[in-house]
Image 1 (cartoon, rainbow, N blue to C red):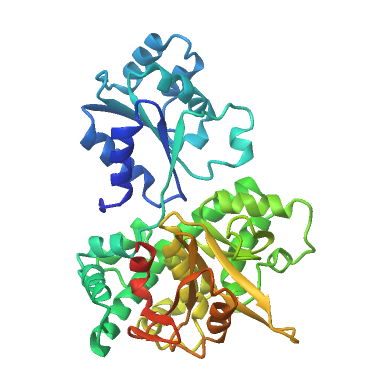
Image 2: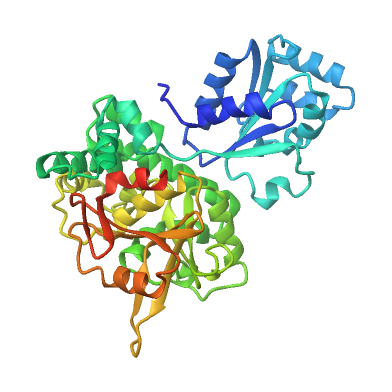
Length: 445
């Protein structure tokens, strides 16, 4: 099943403006839909294409890359081995899962310079050092990050008008209304529960119940952990990944590696962390020490939080130890009756929504005067020369003391302040209160 994805438009832009000078590399976790997007694009937008999946291609295809000095012969061999005929000036060659065959990635420099055809690459765990340490990374390569389906793409997939209608309401500045807001929040919780991985969305559309959809998501997590073991056989990388929901639930100021691994932090742990971030299965949010100066320039490399790239997988990982009650858990979640404080679950959803716009994640903490406790703003987002501050609540809007203190402390750089929850639109204390499903409209203002 093919789903409409925003990345398709990005590929159209690349083809029109940059494809004669650059290849494009689609980066993202496995099962996020990279191959499907690229295959559809290649067949729709070009007269001819050759699609090479290096996870399953023949030795004859791989042998073509042994000698690329004579490109006339290279293209003849490639067409013969693939059984496809290329059209000069209107063909694309796709290198799928290119991290499995670094020699092809190194060849990109010469293939792009030749100019006969266009080139698209896809990769998972693409920047892991062992995959690229012996090759020259091409400078003639643009990168396009592919994320799990966002809420708008999910609404496209299930033929829902919730996203479009809520956008119209947001633009009026008026309240949604209690009954409609409750319904739209339930629709958003369905999106959170299913997630944005195309396989899970397809299962939902096929009428599978939540327990069956959960099994689909577990196979994706298993796949990720198999990849982690290839990189780190000690299991520490998997431990970091599995620790994310637990550490967010404890409302820590930062992610603690030693708590995830059960051992004192070692010299190789930071490299493992970067491997995990490179896998695109997680998003990293840095604590910025001085929002007045710059979010990027004042981020602390020692103080950060981790979120899962997909909130649907996050929920599955939360309850990975209880497969037999999955349906009951999802029923309670969809009706907002889970007893635990699930602020961290909605926080992960917001992190996913911000990251899917291509923005880096930042948060800010500062100590309360005369106390060991601290204030925290969940997310800071650039807004021109200023910043927007965002706090996330699981249900009610709370006292929002941190937000009020932040506005007072950084008044000169705060453009707007938002508290996201399940409640309807309102404004109070110079703070805009929004239902969480409206975040995208804030990010795109």
